[in-house]
Amino acid sequence: MKQLTVLLVGSGGREHALAWKIAQSPRLKKLYIAPGNPGTMRFGENVPIAATDIRDLVDFAQAKRVDFVVIGPDDPLSIGIVDAFHTAGILVFGPTKAAAELEWSKAYAKDFMLRHNIPTARYETFTQFERAVAYADEQSYPLVIKASGLALGKGVIIAKNKHEALETLREIMIEKVFGDAGSEVVIEEFLDGIEFSVHVFSDGKTWRLFPASQDHKRVHDDDQGLNTGGMGVVSPLPFIPMDMLARIDREIVTPALSGMADEGKPFVGILYPGVMLTAEGPKVFEFNVRFGDPETQTYMRMLETDILGILEACALGTLHEIDIHWRNDISACNVILASAGYPGSYEKGKQITGIMRAEEDPNVVVFQAGTKLENGELVTSGGRVLSVSAIASNPKDALDAAYEAIEKIHFWGKQYRKDIGKKALVAGLQ
Ligand code: AMP
Ligand code: GLY
Image 1 (tube, rainbow, N blue to C red):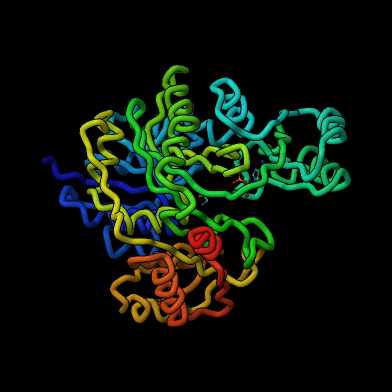
Image 2: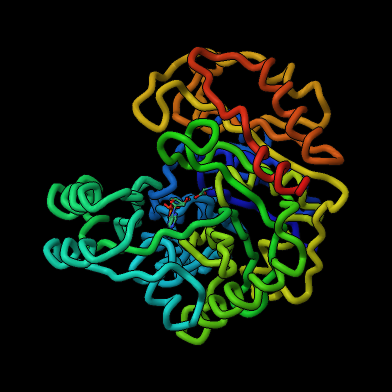
C-alpha cells in the first residue's frame, strides 16, 4: 500500500486527536500540521500557515509533494479549501464549498431539510427586521433565533419571551452583532428533548455512522451559563440503542446524503447532525460538515480501524471497500479545561503543568487546544485549553479516570464542568 505524506489543517483539540490517531497509521510517511499546536508537534511537523490561507496551503502541499490533505475546521471549508485542492489535483478529505453550505448557511440547511423530509424544528427565514418581528409576535415561547451564517457557535439565542425575541432580532439584524452572519435569520420552534451528536463518514455514495456521543455545550454544570464550543463528551450513549441509530440513519442520514448527491453536491467528509431526541422522535437542529470538537477527542480513542485508510477511501469514493471497527468493549470521554472567563474574555499566558503526570495513567491522553510554547514553557493561549480524555470498561470508570487526571493538571484560572457524562450515566441506569 502506498505510503502517504499528509497535511492536516487546523490547530484545535480536534486536530491534536486526529494527529495522534494518524500518527498510528502504518500508511503514514510524513505528517505536516498547519498551523497545529504544541501537542501536534509530537506527531509531525507544525507549519506556520493559518487554516484559512488557502493559497499558501496549496503552494506548501505542492512544494512538499503532499499526497493527502485532511481539513479539520469549518471556516476553511466555507471558503472553498477543498475546491482549491481539487483544482490543484491533490487528494483531500472534506466537503466542497457547495456541500459545506449545510453548515455555513442555516437558512440553506433548513430549506434542504424541508425538501428532503428530514425531521427538524418548524421554522421561517427572514431578511427583513419588521417581518421577523411580526412573525415572532405570533409564536409560542421559548423561541429559537439563529443568525444564518457562521458565528463561532454563538449565533443561536433561545428567547424566553416576546421582549427577548425583539431585543435579539434588533441585535442581530439592526446592530449586526454577528456581522454579515446575521443578514438573514432563522426563527424556529424550540425542541424539547435530549441533545446528542451523530457523526457519519461519507464518500458521497456510501456512509457509515459512528457510535452516538453527547457533548455538553453550556459552560457551567447542569447546563447553566452561556453556550460554548463544547465542554466535554461521552460515548457511546446508553439511551441511543442500535435501533435508534438505525432510525437516525433512515430518517436523517440517508435522506441528507442521498439528497446532496441528487442535488449534484455529493457530500464527502464528516456529516455531523446535531440531533434532539424529542417525544416525537429524533429531530435535527443543525448540520455540521466536519469532525466535532471535542467529539473527536473521544472518538479517536474508540476507533480501531486505521484512520488514514478510512479518510482516503472517503476522498477516493471507495468507502464501500472498508470495514470500520469501533472498540465496543469500552466507554470513552473527554473533559475540557478552559481559561477562567471563557466563553467571554479571558487572560492568556498562564503556565500549564502536570500533563505528563496526568498521562501516567495509561488510559488517559491529554489533547491540547489553546496552548503555546513561550520560552520553552507551555502556556495558555485560548479559551478551551486542554481536553483530558480517558477510556475504561464502563462510563463511570472512564469519567473517574479523566477527573483524577484533571487534579494533576494546573494552570491559573482552570475551569471545567464537574458533571460531564452525568446525564448519560443517569439515563443508562433508568
Ligand atoms: P448551534 O449553534 O446550532 O450548535 O446551536 C447551539 C445550541 O442551541 C444547540 O447545541 C442546542 O442546544 C440549541 N438549539 C439549537 N436549535 C434549537 C432548537 N430548535 N430547540 C432547542 N434548542 C436548540
Ligand atoms: N461539539 C461542537 C462542535 O464541534 O460544533
